[in-house]
Amino acid sequence: MTALARALSRATQGLSRTSDTPRLDAELLMAAALGISRDALLLHPPAVDVPVDFAVMIERRVAGEPVAYITGQRAFWTIDLEVGPGALIPRPDSETLIVAAVEHFAGTAGPRRILDLGTGPGTLLLAALDEWPSATGLGVDMSDEALTFARRNSARLGLDRRAEFRRGDWAGGIDQQFDLILCNPPYIAEGAELGPGVAEHEPAGALFAGTDGLDDYRRLAPQLAGLLRAGGLAAIEIGFDQAEAVTDLFAPTGLGPSLARDLGGRPRALLLRHGS
Ligand SMILES: C[S@@+](CC[C@H](N)C(=O)[O-])C[C@H]1O[C@@H](n2cnc3c(N)ncnc32)[C@H](O)[C@@H]1O
Image (cartoon, rainbow, N blue to C red; front, side, top):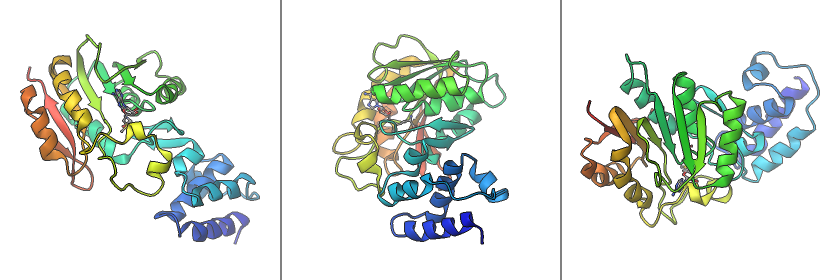
């Protein structure tokens, strides 16, 4: 057994007490410590000593810090995003919004103008701009820390000529119209139990939305209809058990709310379509 393989086994054992995915975590952290991808680690393990940083990374993970904050990276859709404290770590469930948009614009030239409300580290806007190379977009967030990550990601990905980021309170003060509106607002009820490490490490302003988790949908519902161009789509992420409540809140928009499901088959996005 090589030194790397031994270190991975030991780390996996240590992490199994605190993580649901100990082997994956150990591999991601080893790859980051070596400065290579996980694929490269698994397919072509380098014959080198265990990097000195690896033990520290494992200690941080055992203490509950998310892997993405330790590596500073998280993959989302077709892009890699830089993340850290102050910016929500992108979740695979949010790709449901991009899938819905790809389906909506299939067979067309795609959206020309895209708005991402609550952009965090630029997650949905930058994924959408990567998908549609002629589009331009605006990302809004109330958190300066999140916007710093968004602007850095946009530059790293070579998307900064097509992406503008602005501090704002949802759609307040926006007087343009968009073909695609993406929005993943906070939707967790205050006091709800979250997965290990989430409440301790990720920003509360990205997670919680009042006593029933619906406060931000109440604010967004009256704002969105006027921002959507004819033929456009708004895709808004929801908690898996919020479909009925959020559908009711957006019914007055007259944009025929429908639902998109995540890979687990749970309702994950509310879709509003502006007829032609
Ligand atoms: C659930 S996170 C989504 C981050 C990213 N869009 C994603 O999908 O991973 C919600 C984001 O909304 C931002 N936010 C919260 N309240 C806001 C408000 N009133 N106006 C604009 N952004 C807000 C938070 O700072 C956070 O970045």
